[in-house]
Length: 253
Image (cartoon, rainbow, N blue to C red; front, side, top):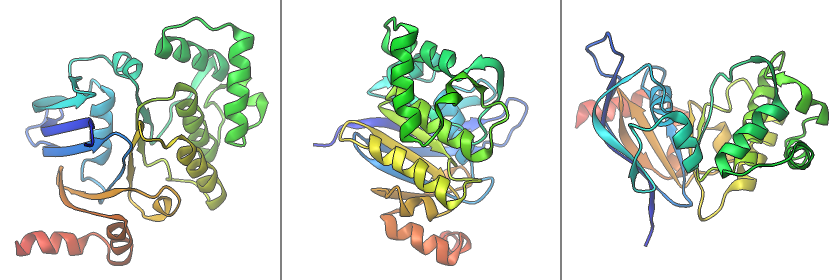
C-alpha cells in the first residue's frame, strides 16, 4: 500500500489585500517515491503553491490543510519544514552577497541533520556534489548566486538539494532559462536522487524537462486548482495542443 508523503486538501489562498483567491480548492496527494509534474498557463497559481508549501509569509491561507508525513505544516516556519525534509528549488534564486556557498550549505546541513560538521569534513561533502553537477570547486568560495548565470543558479539549487537530501522536493520551473546542456545536467542530478522514499513535484510550463525527468503523474492546473490528471502522455498532448483545449473541455462539462 502506498504511503502519502504530501497531502494538500481543499486549499484556498489569497494575497492579504485581495478578495479573489489565487488557489481555489486545490487538492493533491503525492505518495512516497512518486514524481508528479504540475503544468499550467501563466497565472494559474503554480508558483503560489510552491511558495505556500515552503512557508512564504506573504500569502493568506483562508482554508484547507497541508500534511507532510502526516503532520500539519501550515503553522510551521520555513526552517521547521526544511528540517523535516522539505525542499524548494526556487524559480528565481536570490543572490546573497557576502555569504559563501560553503558556509551557507554547511549551516543548512547542520540544521537539517541536527549535527555538527567540521569545515574540512563538509568541504569534502560539498566537492562531491559540485562535481556531480559539473560545477568547478571554486564555486564553494563564491557568494551565494552572486554573479551567477541563470544556468549556474539552477544547477546550484540541485547541488543544495543533493547535499540536504530532502524527502520531498518541489522544483519550481527549474527548467526555465536553461539551454539543453544545462537541462541535461540538472535532470541528471534530479534523477540521481530518485528513490522509493523520496518524492518530487516538478512545476513547469513545458514538456521538455519531462523528457529527462519522467513523471509518474501529470496534472494540469488552471484558475487555482487541478483540472486534469493523467500519465506522461498528457504532457506530450499539452505540448502539441497548448492549454486552451483543456479549458475547452471544462466549458463543455
